[in-house]
Image 1: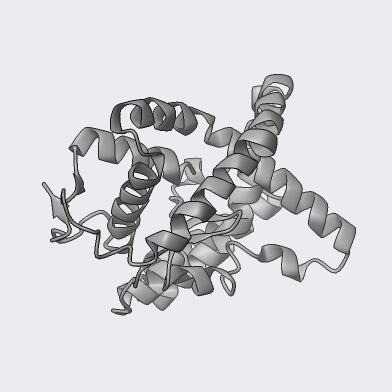
Image 2: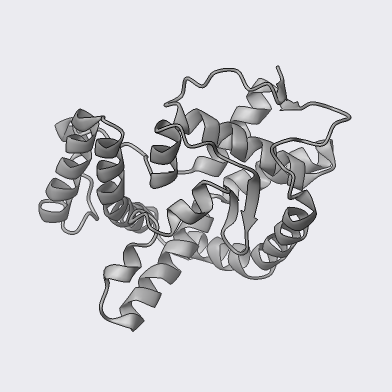
Length: 236
């Protein structure tokens, strides 16, 4: 649920960093990516973070949990389909089972009744599916307003129902409201990660490099289901 936080903690714990004194071969578009990263960071500090902080302060914890469950339930559809595309039929069936159970018994997913029933939650998307089938990640790429990605993952997320489920909603106003709530609650979930990032930036002096290395390392781990081969672009 909190991939950026997990990524930041992973880098802090492992102490991995890109090889010093060299241009990172994973980031040939750095001249474009850095300004976009700074733009995204500015929008976050001026708009998203204050709204997310207010949301977290005024919204009861049980309501936040219910909202997160609701959106997590929507994501289970894309996760299930991608697990099946990766040949992980058992996991995919579990994800689609979660969707059915939580949508009906859990009242549109606000209550997670599937987990206690043994239906484990997973996290798969179409970019991971392409990686599983051997499509290389390509260069690191920062998407305006959306953040870190790669040449493989950026176009993949536009066709993945896990991210753009709103296209299936006929009423435009409802779609925008649901999207807005999703953005705010997602940013609220990352407030702790933001504190880690600020502390790391004080140490490293470069938030762009830290976020890039954290995100790429986490993404690589996700594609290989937590067991990635060693990356020659890292100094372990």
